[in-house]
Image (cartoon, rainbow, N blue to C red; front, side, top):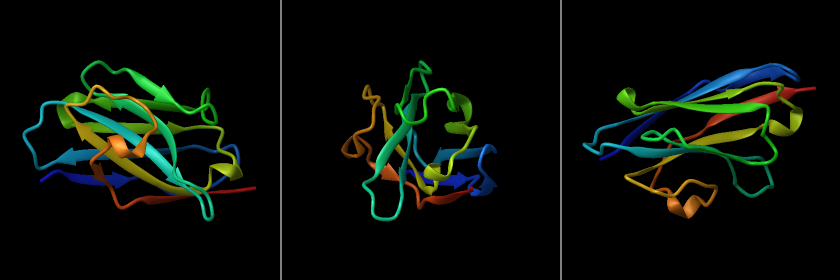
Length: 125
């Protein structure tokens, strides 16, 4: 059974930075696509960014391009989301999601089988 460990949320002022981590464990899969989604109160879940650990191909939502950077460590089955120039509208619960051995790279939540519990990111103005 795949297990997900998320870390790195918190409270930051507008313009600040946070780094989220998502680590997969507990399975024998060789590769993952790892994505970050976010959901603010009263809003739909939004796909923020994703990465294929094998090729390091990446996806970004338009709302975070130029501010967020996703990276991966294939040996550790871990992805990192560096969030810079944070805005109050980035406030949400951020969820890590992953799919083993996938060729999909994008924001469709139905393409990801495993989900973390979520970590709160709050950006104050």
